[in-house]
Image: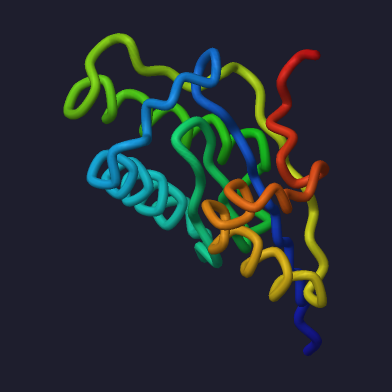
Length: 139
């Protein structure tokens, strides 16, 4: 009997409300990232890379076909914002409404992982990739 093989890799990007630098403290950033990581795993995702800047997050996941892209974004953003408001930053914290979700092919994974892991260096050097920095914001 043949089995189906389906691999779906999604690069999510979303920003804090009004691009406020809520995640500038390394301890807060780490705790918010851990919350996002745990939520993604709860839904059966494999977290490939997770990093960001004080005002946005990059997340590369392999997602199961049983979970929709929009549901996963809603869960990761919702649970992490509730956690950040209750435990870390108070009521001022929130994520923006939108997000970007980009499909990634297997061959692109090493490049995207390196980009996500090097977020702070890319922003400092001005070597960001415009398409990978879009957060679904209105312009």
